Length: 386
Image 1 (cartoon, helix red, strand yellow):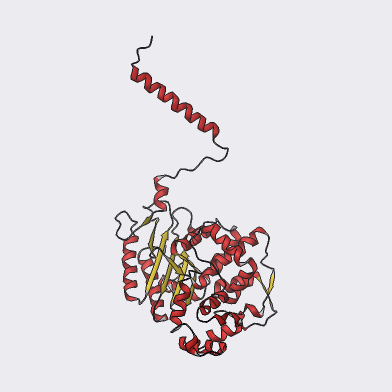
Image 2: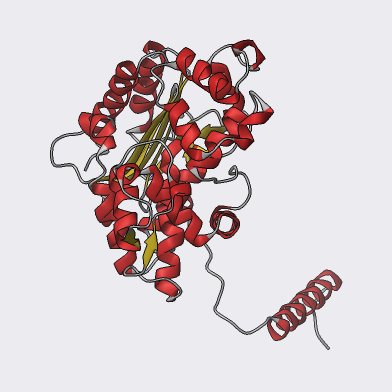
């Protein structure tokens, strides 16, 4: 006869019941790898902090104060997202989001997801870097790069188009690559990578039609060469005058007071825009090898390191020799510079920092370049360049 008390028997029965239930769960669990349970250290690595947080990594509060100072001196709005990769807060890992939690117009930096989508197909064997595409007259669009000056019918390797798109910001090259992967499939892949929340990615040419289309319905009947003529007018007022001339209407028939209104209205559509955190997520997946093969990842980084437009932005404020793979773009009162410092030190606490910065509603390109350069200096002062 056992001398266990009644409560002890009850606890024993409860324990046996829980054990049986646990064994049943194990028996019913599908086969596969054991789930990975993040440690507290791993949780710190992906944490996002707010300015003034006493638990933040040492670099975060000084940097946020510097960004506030830059924003205060720049007319318009300045959004910044910074993420230091690593294994723990003590090692500096963490994120700072000063992008107001909203979407920002990315302009030509959309060439980054476009190139990833192309190289993904190269890795899958459905495209080849040596495959050639014929330049069509309908591909012409205003912007940086030299393809606008080439002859229709000329053929270019996909490898060449990737180089021109990522290094030179060539709008024609980017649009040809979008045509190759397909706009629908491109946006499907962006959603697969990042989830929903980013705006529709379009060609540069479609962006022109969408922007001017809100001004007058006749815009949709204009050719791409007509729109190039409009864009090449000297300033905003001259562009609207040129547009009215091509449409054969009076200037007053255009539903816009100036070009600032045209592009504010276009940016309100959310096309080619995304929250800064989503751009950071894409770049982290890229440098971590989650999206492309090692060869394709290396090719992307090689081109981004050689980007020409970004030399006058964040890079100009970083110490000489800093490894910075980045893309930059400017538009009417809009600018973005996105990139990764030390992209090949992503393992452990090697010192990889992702930075996404966008400015809007500013008055002068020189002022916004100074703001981006000041951000580069602030990143270096915070120790994020190494």
